[in-house]
Structure formats: structure tokens, C-alpha cells
Image (cartoon, rainbow, N blue to C red; front, side, top):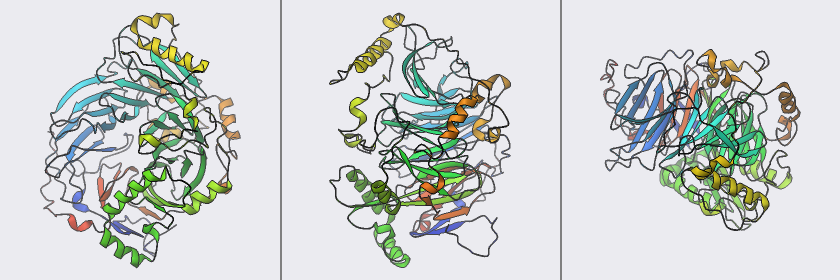
Length: 599
């Protein structure tokens, strides 16, 4: 593990750290928080979350930042490394009563300087659609908690859509919504649409179009986080039962799974080219999973507590044909000179273009390096390098595939890349996938060409009938009464301490349920299999950087072009300038902080 500043106190909060590409520095004047800058009393509260959206403002200040602290939600112009943060002028500020905001996401397709569609999930299960620029609240979904009473753990707009969004709850269910539809005044009834190993997809049984369009039941326990692949075609779910499940989203087919070394998985992210998925969780490890091979290829040990966020750094990731990555060739001094001459953003753009080309390489040698980061409840930031020394030797020597993959061999499947044309190879499992599930239940869905198997015909019949309101009576009603045995409180690694498992009321115990003892026994048997290799069976990554950067547990890590952003549970959102970018900040008088009055 790389460590700087030998001899210094280990509990000292770092304000800068060094990597091969240079020094990252904390910008004190670019800190976002509550206007009064008073640390938030975080005991028993939901994690602080941060989301960004670019409104394509012609003035050059197009980035907008949204973050929640306790009952409060803030929306600011994000000035990053350019100018100091002005906390006296939030675009919007909201204080909620009776429920807490838990997560949020803005739609990048419809965002403009005059309007932003911002989704906000809450601890009581509701989802609000607001416009923080117009200061309007347009819609409230699951208002009466008839769809799900448990806390919203994650929500995101479906890539490429201005109307569809996906919401995950700690009950273990995910729901697909359409902003144009209402939720109804009675609890929804569902009919089974597709079922696989430890997951099921139901469609809403209604004579008129209503939300939710689909209900996904995934694993046992909470769906802590999900992430769409770069091309939007695949969905990775990190679940409290310790499983990573990767689905083909439209077809609702399980592509592959992985089991954590111990405990639940709390976070997940995709590499920029969609070839790798990284997870973190209660085993204090980061785990790298290959999409094409459906297997664990490496683990990283550096955190001393649960890993709360993992994210790839698209600016450092490098792919080159037939030679070593420029970021890691030569001495550190040579690298500094190259950085100053070329600029990190230009290098990042060329790396991104090479990432897309890598999906179609015809046997030529490829040199690749991925950079990803992680933050945890141990208040530490770790940076990791995933190099060809880890990736390529394993690809040549190991041929194990995931035994629990339900959609056939994964070895021929190409990664879901940034280009839709190369998301799945022609020889991969896509040819055997069932037709895509409908993203709307108000219009008929045309059947795909080429599917002639009985299974394909059956799936198409179910979809078409589910889409036509007058035809839903042909199917039997599936009652929404799923009985799960309550977990034993002494055998779950104190999961009640996890922020993703904070309940609201005793009546919401359904959201706390997990699998039976038999299921736990099956999980124990997975250790030492391709589903969950032993520690000595796969490479162990060492952290390039591992630094304590906060007093409270870290809940946010986001990589931007000229900086990286972190946040802790005290409510402080910090900007770390990339090497060579710190001089862009125009310092302002930080004494103009307001008294924290409600806007």
C-alpha cells in the first residue's frame, strides 16, 4: 500500500496526496455544505449523497450540483476548480418534514439552463419529481406508499429516456416508472412476466396505463445500489444478500452473478468501456468482476471498514495498441513533464476513444490500465490501478466461468461498450435472449425478427398481451403477498448498523427480511467456487493511495474532468483538484457565508 508522509500521525486528515500523475489538492474555498458550515449531526441519518448535471450553459458554468444533508436538499451552480463556492446563493433549497431525502438524480437529456428534471427518493418510499430551477414540484410517485413502504435506496433515469426511471427499495424490489403515468389510488396487482434464479419480473395488471410499469424482485434483502452499463443495455445490482447480479435490462435476462467474500454488497460501478464491474461492501474489499468471463478477476484490500462507494476515473483509464500506457511509462519526473505538455483532459479524451476501439480489436496486442477509487466508513479514500499484469495473464490462464449464470456461457459475450454497435458480439448470448421487455405498458410492442424458438414465442405473447389493456384479463392475478422468514438478528454481521438498513417504523419490517437458513447454507458453499473465489485464488490489489480525508464516514466519490469530489456524513462536499488544475481557482472572500436562513 502506498503511503506518504511517514512519521506523521495516522489520524491526521490529509489535504493532498500524490500519485504518479502528480499531486491532488483539496480546494478549501470550493467546499459545499449547509450555508452555515456547521457540521451536521449525522447519527441515525441517511447518507449524504451528491449528484451532478450539466445544463449546457453558454456562460461556461454549466455544472449543477445537488446534495442532501439530513432533511435538507440543496441545488447549486458548481464552480469546481474555477471559482470558490458561494453558499449564500443556492438555486434551490428544500427542507422536508416527516421524511428524509435519501438519493437523487437529474435527467441529462432534458436539462437546460431554465429547467432540470430532478428525481428525489425518500426514506418513507416516496419519489418526488421537482424542477429546482423553476422551484416547482411537478409530481409525487408512491405518495400513499401503496407500491412500496420501504426506503428508497437508489434511483436513476433510464439512459436515453426522458420519461422512464428506475427506483430500488430496501425491500429488495425495483420499480420502473413513467413520468407520464399516474400511480393509482389502490395497491397495484401484478402478473408474472419473467422469472429466473433468485429474481422475478412482474408487470402491473391494470385496464389503464399506470405506474409502476414493471416490478423487479431481486435476491433476498435490499437492493443497495444499481448501475447501468455505459451503453444502457445492462444493469448491475449490488444486493444486501451479498450477490452482484448483472441483467440484460430490456430482456430481463440474468447475464452473470458474483458473491461477496462476506456480508452484503453496498456499491457498484462499471468501467468506462463496460468490460469490468467493481463492487464494494461489508467485507471491506473492492472486487473486480469481468463482464465477458462472468468471474471475479481481482480483489483489493485497503479499507478498514465497509466500502460505501466505488467509481472509475475515466480520465486516467488508458488503452493503447501494442505499447505500455503513457500514464505509467518512464519515471515519475518524465511523467510530470508529459502531463504538463499534453494535459490530462486531452489524454482522457484519447483514452476514451481507444476504449471504444478496443471492443473491435482483431487480435492485436492491447495495453490497458484502469483507475478506480473507493471510499468507506473508515473515512479513507483509496485509489487503485487495474493493469494488464492483472487482466491479461488471468485471461490466458483461467477459463472458469460463473456456474450460476442462467443465460448460457458468458465467455463469448462482448462487454457493453460505449458504442451501441459493439455491446454484444454476434456469437454471444444475445442471440438466445428473450425479446426485450416493454418500457411502456400503453402501446403494443413489436415482436423481434429472427426469434423462432418456443420460448421466444411465449415471451412475446406475454409481452404483447400485457401491453394491451383489454387483454389483461387472460392472465391469472398474481397476488402481492410474498412471505419471507424474518432473519435472525445475531447472525447478520450487525446489518442494522448499515445506513442502507435504517428503518422508518416497526410496520416496515418487510424491508428488513432476508433469506432462510437453507439459503445461508448455500451461500457458505459458494466460497472457493468461481462465484466466490478464495483470497489466495485470485490476485490481490494494493491501493495506490489510501488516505484519511474526513472525520466522518465517506459517502460520495465522483470523478470529473478537472477534479474529484468527495463527501462525508457531516455534510461537507469537497473538491480535489487534479494535478495542474489547482491554479484555475479564483479565490474569493470566504467570510461572506450566510447565517443559514431558510430560502
